[in-house]
Image 1: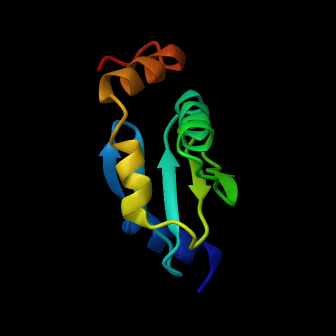
Image 2 (image 1 turned 90 degrees about the horizontal axis):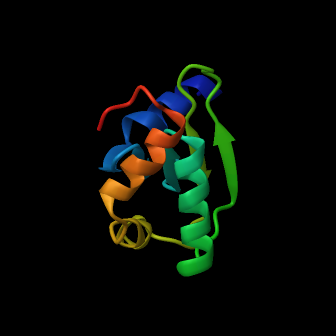
Length: 108
């Protein structure tokens, strides 16, 4: 399977859980958290590491300059329900406010 096909398979398993945030698993069953904006990515990264003691293994970034997506890749140390439970404690309205900082044409 090529890297592109692997990426497409991973994307097809993603589901929206909060505004601008999708969660899913890779072909290997590892958790992926994709975030549509760098400011939200930074906020989520700080929240997970500082308040939830959750660390991701590495981050990848989409190649599309018009629609940047930042993805956290987690080890098998965490379950999808554990990551999702932490994230669902966040206020969707606050995420929309963060998104609008860099996306002035966005109307939530």
